[in-house]
Length: 440
Image (cartoon, rainbow, N blue to C red; front, side, top):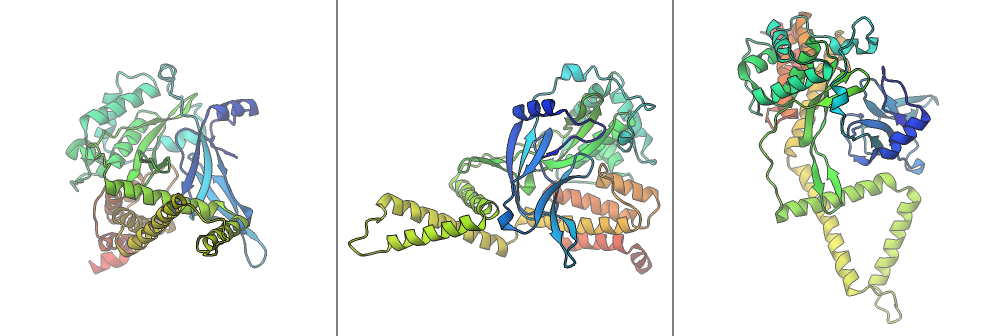
């Protein structure tokens, strides 16, 4: 098991860990292939375990902590010379997470004191940094909102409430290019999606001395009544904030106001989609959980059952009942439906997921180009914070990258339909800023 504790928190003793695990929420997660190897969990994760069949693959799956509380799945491989090396595993994976979901004791959190910079653990320093060109009125607003709040927890609550009640959630993004994105959001447009709210709260917390970080993950999901599981999709992507409370660790806050309620779809098409989703999950579980011997046994059993089903001899005593035949036909139809659904998805645009993948691939290409020029994104750093740092350094691609970040957020966290060519154009300007400047 990999413990989810990160510095400056200390590892718990064995006795404490056993007690925490016995009270924890246990989640068995089936993660479909993504373009990231990071593992997801309900807050607050205590530990991670993988479930693996050695007979399914020659590679060994391991877990690796990389700072900022992030846990990654890595795959051990052997090259032609016999040397072992690790690569990120982005294919399907089943793992188990233990999370502490007990309600936080706000009375105790409210008693926490502000950090003393002289005695602050050095690991927290990156979570207090703000851009040098941060608009002064953002700092002034943070100080004004928290002027009557004492301690980091109360300051975080004040900022969370201010953002929830003074701004509106929208996917129809507008920008006044005369201002930096955060300045524009807080003082001009006063509306945005979750990334704007989380970035604003994280920066304003830092401005008043509270270590903070913006967190990407998923929120909500859909309960599947056929398979009795919670399905999380790309459309459930969300962004929130964690603030460091001394003595307690990272505490979650969500400054994004509620959007319009989703339609409660209970019609026939919805139920069929849930049924197909359950069949897909069953197949996925079968592929990643069953070893080769079990798969051979299942195929052999199916062959014997099929032989008995169509055996016309009078001596056949294993003839299935009418109820069994109906059940088998229904299951076969479900499998055919799932197969047809997969084929249909391959032939037609998978609107949100496809757009997400295109945007993420383009965004990653731009990040790689910036990294080659020395702009390495820290684990705690959002794309918007990185764009401010690139602009501060005077990089010729700063404007293009800032615009790409806005477009990426609009697709990733909203439902914007931005042409792939537009994203590619901005990424090209980030990758080759000099060439585009000469062409202009």
